[in-house]
Image 1 (cartoon, rainbow, N blue to C red):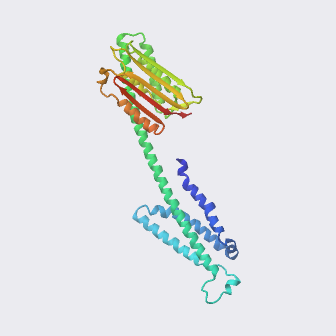
Image 2: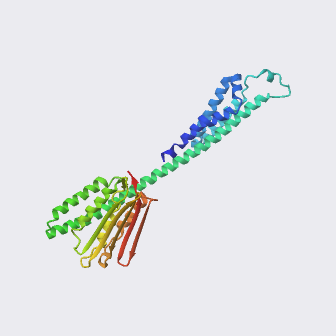
Length: 344
């Protein structure tokens, strides 16, 4: 984006260093220097001035209020008057021009000079107006990008704020159950809970983190959830990384699907299985979860809100480099997410 922002500057350099000098060399400037060098310097300086007057002032003022538009029109008329005076100026004539026939009102070189001045003025004016309009278009594009970026940041902050209470509710419920049962694993569970909280508040605000760190967080979450689920619920987790470079991912983007699997895939009476698989190959992460859905869990209020928020986060963070497929077949529920990860 910064390269697009610099394009007007590049156009200015092209005009000042390439375009205008090339047009001047098409004219007999060398002979004009011999006849009147001061005039030639004045004409060149005026052409540069016209470019920046049109580029910086006139094109900008014409888009603002009525007062500025009147000033722009007045300034445009002033440039026309000055150009007319420069074009009418007669350089020192050569002896051949002094001997021209009386019926000729102006020598041919005088006509060439006037035509050249007006030609350069028109070309410079048109080029400067085009660059000025392009600069305004670039400025508006950058402004819209900034507004969209700020909006996306606000939405992401909102979705993250909605993730944390969901996680805290589930985890505190687990710890509460351990305390009531007097489990000897309560202290260990609290330590894992502290580690999870430390991860959330140290990495939750970052844009990207190592994928291994995110996977380790998921592993700790699964270990903590195993304290509350019944023994007839089996959890299978695997992670394979076939990539040779370090990759990064947006934090807390995967945990929603893991939470969803534990929330709806556990029954106090019926045996069940939960599968969580993460596989990285050629810089692409494929993350899948699969679990059963029981009638008792289907009646829980708020089902699917976490996944909806995560879907929106993915659209904001990975607009064109992710795919999310959610499939439900009877009492079987599966999620398949693929993300093109960023290299560190």
